[in-house]
Amino acid sequence: MAGGVRVGGPDLRRLLAGTAAVAAGGAVGHALPVVTASGVLRRRCWPRLAGVGAANRIALTFDDGPRRASTARFLRALERADVRATFFLLGRLLDRDPGLGREMAAAGHELAVHGWEHRNLLCRSPAATYADIARARDAVAAVTGAAPLWYRPPYGVLTISALLACRRLGLTPRLWTAWGRDWDATRSPAAIWETIVKDLDGGGTLLLHDSDHASSPGAWRGALAVLPRLVRWARERELTIGTLGAHEERGCREPGAGVCRSGSDRGMATYRVGNRSR
Ligand SMILES: [Zn+2]
Picture (cartoon, rainbow, N blue to C red):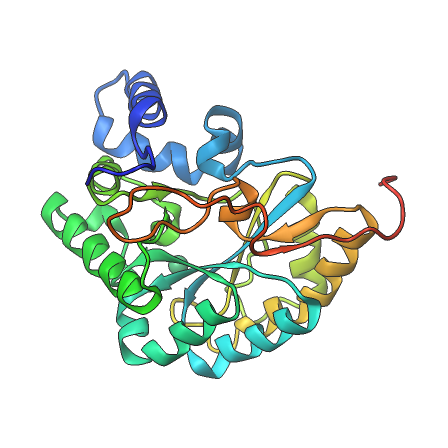
């Protein structure tokens, strides 16, 4: 769709060109997922796709919700910390509880698209990929009243079909620079935190999960437990935690308007305690 947000353009051309280079042997169809699923390659080759933003900010993102049993707890924790985040939602779950989606949006969080089903796109045809993303996008737009900006594929596996679908649907793909490997319920909050700080730095995008829809039962408790530590860590470094839209100074688009509001005053919680020493 036409609009003020450029989804493909140089980013998409560069990504497709890079894919072709990596896949010089001919396996183009599989090269893109391999490249995008590798954190090191992603950050080096496509920092925008990985979610690298302003150095004094961190984008906090959650996948696989919404589910009231877990997501509501994250909403309360984020409210206590005065932090807004971006939630990559599954359309199927949102359809079961659109009221929860409205609560998230009303609290200032940014709602984004993770797909209708949580399925690896390598197993889906181009038509099925488009239908899945489009249906989820419409579900998010119906709840928020605004077209969502961002798309993140299940498992971080971004296919060429998904990129082309994003371009048609006005979505920008965003992955992550750091994660907590928090989908395993046997991992302690301390282990999750160690994984996070290994890669997280100013300008990064952190992936956590607010539901166990695609992970072991109760795994979300680990991510919930590390949130206060994350906020303290950011405060000590004068890093601002917020939404992806704020991270990249982009706001929500009004349906049909094709323009972006500045995200600079939305979804932000700036900390001014401590010093910059690391
Ligand atoms: Zn997921």
